[in-house]
Length: 277
Image: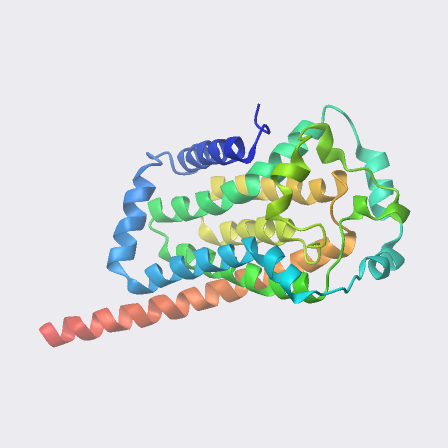
């Protein structure tokens, strides 16, 4: 039912975002829409951040078209396989279980974008502008860093590289994955793993937010998503390490940029206040 088409995926993702915000804040999740409007009216910098965030997400969406026009022929899959061998195959053999597969597919397909959107809602309703801005900055950094790697250092998914001996478990639950989801994510967009970097970034920011419940939710999501990239036969171990490093960079830099943005905004407000007095 969840995986019939990308329209179903989008619909249920929106539902999960609402549920995650409600659970984490114990407030009406639809108030987040009101708050984001207020924040954009209050701060042009936040408005520009939102525009930049959607811009980099759009760039990621069209990355495959850009790649095809560039006629790039590089392929570093064999090099990565030479580094780590049959790690993912062994991982699948150890952990594969039919009852576990639907859970892992659910987290891989739905939780990444749900946690991104819910993070913004949670921080808005919690009046945590530091983490709100940091989340936007971190998302931009993740995609801005990853896209050049996808263009110039392409690595194919593990299951598609025959010597790795890995099965694409995703198709057990989402048979139309290649037709429905593949246009959003190229077969050679492996290093670094954005599923790893984004989920770990959201968890790292949640640890700094003071919202204990959101910290638990994002941590569970990150653990299961990282587990899932190997279980489903999608990413290499190297991709995961690259994703974790990117997450540390994006979360740390995102917080620093957020502090700088808010400090400059508060300075402007302070100057205006003194002038009026």
